[in-house]
Image 1 (cartoon, rainbow, N blue to C red):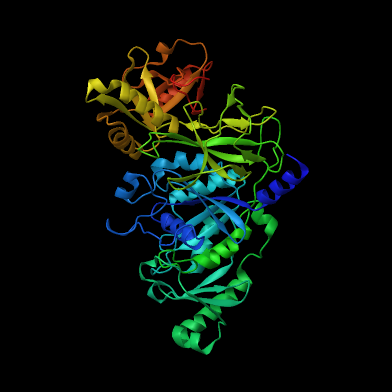
Image 2 (image 1 turned 60 degrees about the vertical axis):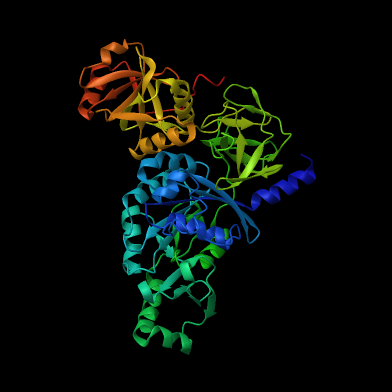
Length: 540
């Protein structure tokens, strides 16, 4: 790039904000995502996961099964502009069975929004995802949602976040009322009362009235007792809450807190107005040659997600890449760091869920979709110039297993293709018996709902009906070493298999059986995570 082009690229990079939303299921994540798109101008009418079939569907839940079940089961990528910033929103699956997809997506985020249900407080899945963010040093912004329902005391919720998650809180605003009496929030930084008008169905932006907390009309609407309680709460919070420290927040050691009712759009706009400045710009990324600055002149990116059949009419395959440095243009020459081979990325897209727009340029911080003929895999690094690799994204040990039973032997070829493509997405992992090889493979998954999704997609996307037979195994370990694999097989306790790259692994029925194998084979290395495998249909 010329000096002028590099200067423009650095300006664009500084305005990128890439973030993921994490939560326990049913905390309102999909609803908040929809409302951020509404206020960001990406959509003009927000859908709801609670609307009936005749109503408008949510934008982020684009897969048919997501809309049937009312849950997010795949990561959606959406871009919108707000207050001069380019916002890249990664909507992750909330269900625990799809946590591996969420872990991969968090590797592409610079900031996380942690959504908490005001009724239920901190829940198990929130704790797991918080720890992932904390280990990665990702700054976390907390949103306490569902203030339109009678919930727990705000002070109690802050105490629970600090006690359970071990992170100090600094509330940027404070709720005014709760349940049916929830009227808005008090902006602690600007000392303003932000009152909202309800919108039917929450499908349009809520009108916001800005005023003083001691305004006579506001005191009358709130009631004398409730107004006195609000002033007492604000005084208590001013004295007791942790002071704001930008450096501590950037280091992931302090979380700003906002209160909302995403369903009614209360508090969404004040949150977004602050979040565009709280969300961190692209950060240097660790690599095999040291940290790669986001404003480096050379283009680089890594693949964190692969999705087949986003467009059922074309049966395509899209690799989602996080741009880590430089600028993408359609004539940029890149190589795959894994094998040094050139890769064409001329057909590149940006997204609003499954809706795509072909683009001619993108900058560090952006998430782009690359048309992939089957050469890329999760964790791959793409480089312009010198080759290096970003830190890999491992596949974790599955905990549930099924054997695939064919319903129609005449569709064996379609079944093989479908399973390989879904495995490369990360939906399931494929294992084979050493003797039977590709006949009736075994599937492994972190959660059982992944099997239901796989079965549904094989039928709807590949026209292949299958049956799954549950297996009794609960643990899997990949094996490295020279000992004969048959030695590790114990009928009723363990079985030896191969993964899609013919790497040996052992399935165990119990933790006791696994520990026994580890003890009896000290010369072998048992691994619970490996780099994603590749099927034989793609080179490299």
